[in-house]
Amino acid sequence: MTAVQAPSTARAVADLFIAYLETGQARPGLFAPDVFTDFTMPTWRLQARGVEDSLALRSGGHPGPGKVIRARFDPTPTGFVLEVEEAWDDDADHWYCRELFRADVGPDGITDLAVYCTGDWSTDQVAQHARSVTLIRP
Image (cartoon, rainbow, N blue to C red):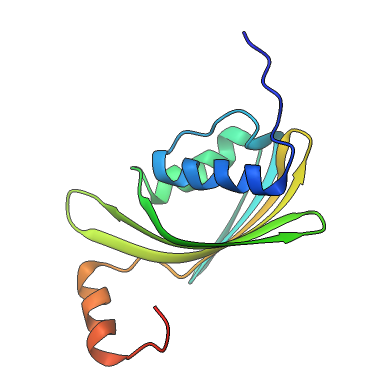
């Protein structure tokens, strides 16, 4: 096994995180072994400790990869905040969501991750929103 050094900057870890969202593959240096994840969705809240259980939270709601169509990165004193818009397809539909991730980063990767998700919007929900609301910014 080859030793892999953890990314040295919050931006590098955020880039690994975006790659994970798009591929479903968590690369070395992304998560610390004992990462804590606190996931809030519109009507529920879930938590996990450890890489495997944290990855299971994501794969339970997004079994396949998606595409981050917009992202904003803001460094914090302990890591970063990442705001994304994501789209993906499954057998039934095309989906969209907005998410906010607040991550604390240590030498082994993300140690603490808070996830806030708008919920998944189907093609019909996206169309209904477009008919009902004119956004000032995309």
